[in-house]
Length: 365
Image (cartoon, rainbow, N blue to C red):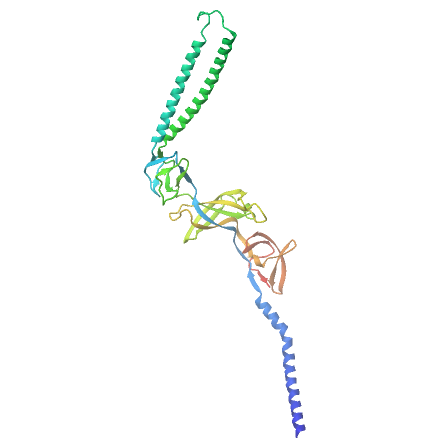
């Protein structure tokens, strides 16, 4: 009885092993075909198209006033009255503020007195010199001693030196007087330009000022600009007059037109040292817009090149080997390598000058 059970177990085990082997052998040869099918399905395909191809550079920066006229205090003094307020419109030649010129006028009077006194002293010195140089014969003497002659010579030379010193002092006093008179004329300060006046610190309107200290500025709201920087690999692609599409970060629906006004020929200070890429300043003028003010964050797209009606493929489908560019072209017989000549390149699209036609399909495996 035990032998029958043993043989039954052996037969069962053999049958199970046979079935497992059959299933494994049957499924194993089909695996490569499945992988090939998946690879074909996963390949990316792109159509060759014809479109306008634009090469551009993205920049970011802040808006600023293109024209700013800074206002400096003409001299130190108290402000008698302000005729302008923060953000007020001013016209060229219009009174902005008036300084108290009393201390300056006092200095002018003192300088004028000093000049007058110096002139009187000079006249007195000349009068004395004329009396000292009278002819000895007319004075009742027939000769002059050697000591007197030496003294007379010394006095004459001394007077010449004193006259030279007086002339220098006179010139210095005249210059000081002229400068103070010019400052007094600026006590009633007139606007040098048309525009909007902005205080240096709008929270603290000055009641007294120091000479040459900046009080504020006059800006032209109709002329704003975007000042940005680009790297050394982009600076040579940018030229004046190139069009720029500008977006205002705070106003998503606002788009502005601009153009490149100036490209700096010198790297920004600090970026021209070390191994990092040097940065160059680019100035872009902006079209007038009532919502545009200084200090806004802007982003711009500088159009550096444009090819209308170009035959293009996605840049990621273009491969490079030594001096040859090529793509993998889908044909009726399968996928084949096709050499191409390229033109304008952008991060997204590449112009194909030779090797492909519109409607062809390229494959990225």
